[in-house]
Image 1 (cartoon, rainbow, N blue to C red):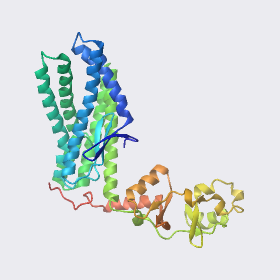
Image 2 (cartoon, rainbow, N blue to C red; image 1 turned 90 degrees about the horizontal axis):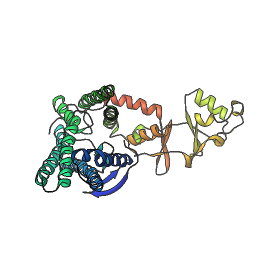
Image 3 (cartoon, one colour; image 1 turned 120 degrees about the horizontal axis):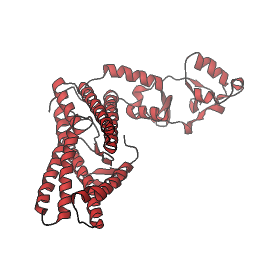
Image 4 (cartoon, rainbow, N blue to C red; image 1 turned 135 degrees about the vertical axis):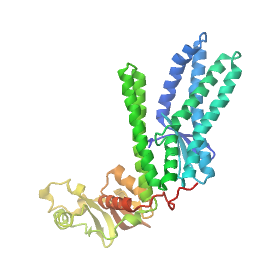
Length: 384
């Protein structure tokens, strides 16, 4: 979802990663706090004090975001859901669960852990800020900011904008009431999309009122949540449908093979046009030499097809992207989508055992979508 990130720490066996966008927002936030926010609230500090407190506040904000995400992770781990990593990015952070919760109660407990923890952090820092009043103004300002921002963090996350915490709470409630994980995901995803649109329209209203920065920021957040809600819903739907399937379940074991010396014209006439094959395997005595696709054929003029052998245009075996027979179906789908492949050979113990085509994969996906169970890998249930 977030592209390439880099690991900075490991806590409780969880990799802590930072996305490059985090560096952008960290610098922008430190500058805003040091140059505008704290100077407006507190007069008489030196420039160094403003920048020290502003930079510390920006860093500590993300520490509290990490604490928020660790709360999700700890609850998930205690309920048997491994959490491989937490990623900090421009809008905060996200905990990556290895699978979806098994029940509505499990999802609710994991989702509310974050906002509750943020409120706890706000309470602690707020009380500490009160103790610093009249004693140390810089410490008072720093702690007061952390208290305020963590209240806002809790409030923002509890809004029903799936996949925010509030959206997951909404899904857990819908799951319990309907007994259907997929239906609950559709409900939460739909509400999340509406919430994204609402923020975008709010941003437009701000722009028309002359508040350009606020308007652009609201529109950006709304656009992000809209895309995240759609992406999360689609991802969860795919996981529900393909979660238990492997490459061997999607492949067909009967595929066309031709000798290396077969003229391209014969391949086109006998297999591609006559039988609708988009690719054929080039093999000698059962040993695969490569794969010849429609794209490969298009590299030479038609008047040379009769004199060009298949082996001259084929993609050799060592350059063909393949998958293992036990590769998860989701990985195969991602490979086909990202690399824009029309077919993927399936190997087992180094031997080709089948072929997966994009067309058949999508047909299988549509059929599985109609017949898939509602719960993610478990019997349909809404229990806690």
